[in-house]
Every structure is written in C-alpha cells, then in structure tokens.
Length: 362
Image (cartoon, rainbow, N blue to C red; front, top):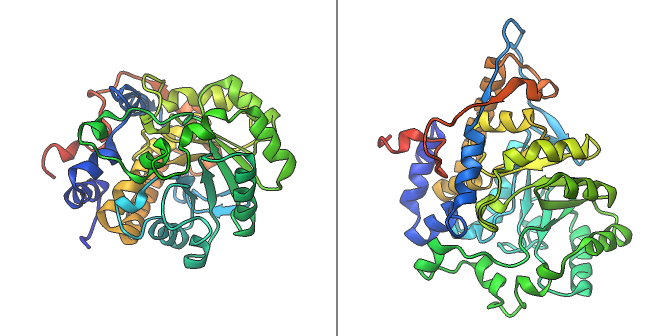
C-alpha cells in the first residue's frame, strides 16, 4: 500500500482503484445533487475566530460515547454495500476502528452480516437497521442485536423510500442497498417497513427493549425535541449525505437548532460534508458531540481497506489537534459557537471541495 501522508493521496488512490460505477456511487447524491453540494458549501461557509495566548501544548480530543472511550469525536457511519469498495467490507472497517479507538455503526445492507461480524472482529459497535419487514421481524432483529453485544440500535428515518440517484441510473448501476430498497432481494424493499415507520415505532422499541436507541435523519428542532421526549438516546442530524431528499439544508446549518432543542439532554451526532479535521472542529463548535464521516470512510476503504482507513484516521486526528491548537483551544469542552462565524465560501461547492489539490494533479 502507498505511504499516504495526506487525505488527498488517499482519495486519488481510491479513484484509481474503483470502476466508474462504484466511484459514482460513492461520491454521488440524489437527483440534481443540490443537497450533496449544499452539505459541502455549508461546511465551507463557517470560518474560525481564533483566540490567542492560551496554553495549547497539550490538546485533548478524547471523549466517551454511550460508555465507550473515543480517541477522537468521530464515528464511522453506516455505509450500505461498503464491500463494493474493499472486499473485507464492514470487517475491514471494524479492524481499523478497533485499533484506532473509535466506533462504527454497521449498516444492515452490507457484509459481513451483523450477527457474523462480532465473531470476526471484537469491539463495541452500533447496528443500523432498515425496516424491510413487519414489527415481529424488527423485534427479532433487535433481540439478535442485543444478544450479539451491540452497544446501541439505530433507525434511519430519512429513507422512507429509495431516492432517484441519477448518476447510478444513467449507468444502470444498482448496488446491494439499491436492490434491497427496490425489493429485488425478495425482502419487500424499503417501502415495506421504512415508509410505515412512525413515532409509534420509536415508542414500541423504547417500551420493549433495553438498548440505547439512535434516530438518524433528524433535520429540524421540532423532531429533535420530540426524539428526546420519546426517550431516544442519541439524536443524529443527517440528510443521508445528500443521497435521499434533494434540496435540503446543509446538515451543519440544521445542527444549531437541533442542538438547541436537545439542550444537552442526549448526545448529538451530525454528518454530511465533513471531510477534514477542521470540518470536525466546526461541527463540534456548533453543537455536535460527534461527527459522522461516511464518504471519508468509503474513500479510505477504497484506497486500501483497513490500513488505509487507519492511516486516514491518524491524519484526521492530527488535523483536529492542529486546528484546535491554532484556534487557541486545548479541550473539546471549550469548543463553542463563539469560535466560528459565517462567510462566503471561496469556491463553487463540490463533494470533494475540501481537497483542492486534486484538480492540480497532486
């Protein structure tokens, strides 16, 4: 594997390794890809107001999520069909995050299966489920999730039906997640259970099962407050990386109102356009406790599986610590909205806009 020193190099290698269909599946979004671009534009539009003359000789990025120590405030989100990018799939991710010291959320549409993975790689993790069956089917999955030792259970609420991803349609490219969404796997498709999911589903899970519940796909204060009132243990701000409903706000722009509604009662996670250490720090300033970095994860996997992802996380950690130190901050609890402000982005938004040297051939 190449000796990667920057995320730029990891992305360049990922593109070399993937065919066009798999590359577009990784970097693409829904319909016109407006939400995809807005996610990155939103992150770019926040800039720092650094403080000076603070002792930053030691910068602490450690925290705890659902009782699990976290080396940096970053989570590897669920990625459907991640085995498309590297044959080890979720097991390769699990090995990297276990060695590095963070957590992954396992997608229900990837391999190895959720009840097989703990036998391959030990370590704390979360399971994310798409409802492709009835309530009894869901209950059975949750029981098996608990028996397999997962730390939490995650429902994705922004996938009531599968979106139109025209990059994929134009090439007639259908990954595993797309087959399950359309029902071509024989499971009935997302519309079977996902479209019927409601607040009653949340109430049922909280009443029947003793496992922390995460709701992923929150985008407004009202839903965030209702999640907390319903007993949800983690509120996850996401627009599915711009891959579901198009023309939505950037997740980082939805974050402050969600964080205000949650008011510290439960952890807040956000994803959508976060690609660099500076991006992570911006999200933390605006109210998130943890940042999900799905495309970052997928790109590293495509570049070289476990070892490339582990290298990417080490580079990311260095970027986070450097950003904090240069902003005059030495601990996560000092990251507040006072450290950032809005400015006009410098360049047209692009999913890989955080890596300008790609266009220059580096």
